[in-house]
Image 1 (cartoon, rainbow, N blue to C red):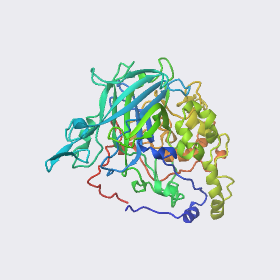
Image 2: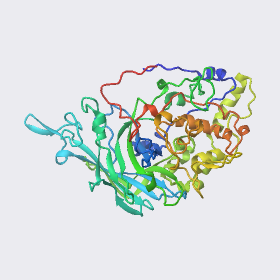
Image 3: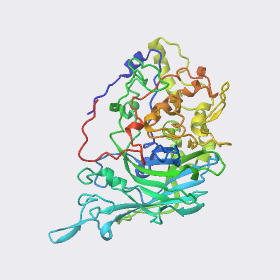
Image 4: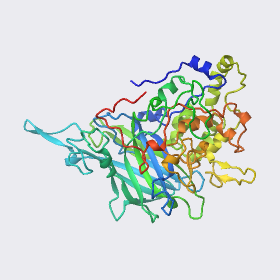
Length: 543
């Protein structure tokens, strides 16, 4: 049991003096009622950033790459055997790129999996009492290589590049470099140190150099289990925000004020996900020049989806390869780009519809949830009276009052342009020309990356234009960033989107107290840490 500071709501309100409560966010884990039924295709997080690995960062003559990390299968318990977390062979998993701002995919990278048992579908077998029988485990001995005969169940996948419409466009296979195979392997999950003595070495053998259609420079791909990197104080957040969600540290990054008395301290002990759970990552690294249009804008948008065949029939006589019969056209069941949108922006009746939609539909179907968000209004109704009463304050509204919320439109739907200020010219951070407003992750591939040690965890809010919401890096603390933006931080940024008077508390250092930084993670592809082993159990973390 971890020890962590607990704050009662009444005591927290009294301590806040003149500051409001506001909840932190949770990433896209179980974000809609429908997706809870199919966790294998549940997209949890999406990262898109200029690669900052030395030699691939576009600096000092190195080629410039963009890394995409699409995570699926939420909250994988390290000890979740004996079957662990294979991907769904009936599904397709896709990363879509829009490189002209019209909210329609121009390039799609499609992953399709195929799981098999060795030994003609029998897996590993042993002889017992004169009978040869299949064992109940995925491996029968230590696994040390991709082709280890002691691994009874294997996973492979193909990667296809689709130009144009994801279903009717031109399809071409992505191959291993040097004329190699178009089939790639996925490592066994980190069962434990006895089964896989050196997991890092084992998993690294599944990083492949790839030849991409229409691209002279090779890329890289990896699919496999990784340690979660999404930091969030999950339990306290959903327990009616049972913390003081204002930064209590004395100094924490550019843009933060001095620590607030009784505010929550930054501590890994506040985190319910990092160090606790694993996730399955589809990692793809592509030369930046192969993602943008020739002579066009360096700004791209991207999002991930997962789809299943439309018809499913339960098989009354299931086998390993066919426990359900599926057929028909693929139907999209999961959609994800910027974190937290479906959780805390889209209304409950529309969450399943959002997962099935395409970005080009957002302006018609979901724009009201961004123009006039409901979450700040709920918080205001809950906490305006208590804050004013206990603090002797006279706030008229804790929630921002600028409607439509053009600050949120810029952050989530269009990208941000920083207007000219005095002699300083305007800067287009990540808004493509003639942009169609649509919810997707946007990245200016022309902004040079920063090495891990130089990254500001608050991204653009902390003065680091290579970070979220200009793409998203694994070390960006998106919980704190999006919490502050929701409460009006951009009204204090001289962007011309809103004014400080529109967000009375928008300049406060809201936080859930669960930090993350790039220095805690790998600085090389695929950037996320090796997964937590199922055995032996890690020693308990410090409080």
